[in-house]
Image (tube, rainbow, N blue to C red; front, top):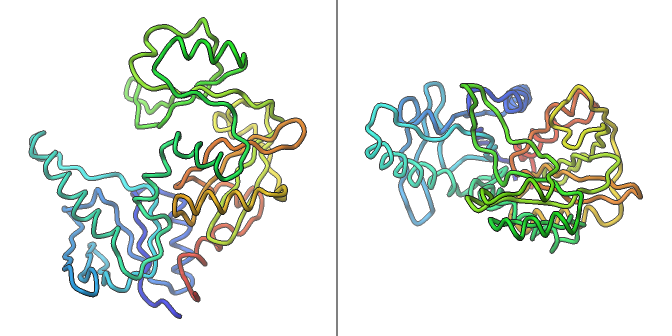
Length: 316
């Protein structure tokens, strides 16, 4: 079956990864409609009818219009979110809710669309506890983990495992003196835990005695595994120290990957593993909207082409 409709790319204006994929699709003659949810309703409009055949209607940007019944695929990346700054707080809250459940509900219900990934499935998979439980069920090795607001439980866990890190459960925008900042993954000791722990949820995890990391990216049927060598606890803190090499998957990893993705209904996933001193892979997390484009020039892997193949859907 040939899919002749456009690819929807849903992301913010500053997204170099999406730019690469769009350029590749344009080079193949595949129509693309790009928009950000933050464009609505200023420069983005839509009209959708609920019919016995499903949703029918159109979505319009300043330069493109898409028939909702003919969308071949959607690359749901990193939209900025709805905003109504001209409204007072209460009215804006109402408008944001209507936009989320209106436009959001429409783009999540397209009849012919392959979602990479479906926004609802992304939401499910972004809960770290859910991901860790699914990883165990899928057969991955998972470090011992505690999620708690109880300082006594936290101290006991750290004392038991000695080498423990703290990880944020999510990473929303956080600014210090107007500059974007992030909460680092860092080792923590029992004597650093005080009663402030009770103020919210925290994730603590036994540190894998690792010799390297692996970023494994799945795009449909394609799997790209890259070993990342460094002396860093968290390789994301300094990309200048990283060394890359393409690696093969150990026995059983692909089966676990497929089981994990199937559990959440994903066709794309950016998996992170720690490789221990005997070569075993330990699951750390899977980001359903993870970055991957920086790995292509470092390794020569055809990742942009693979993503375009998936979105183009030449054959089923």
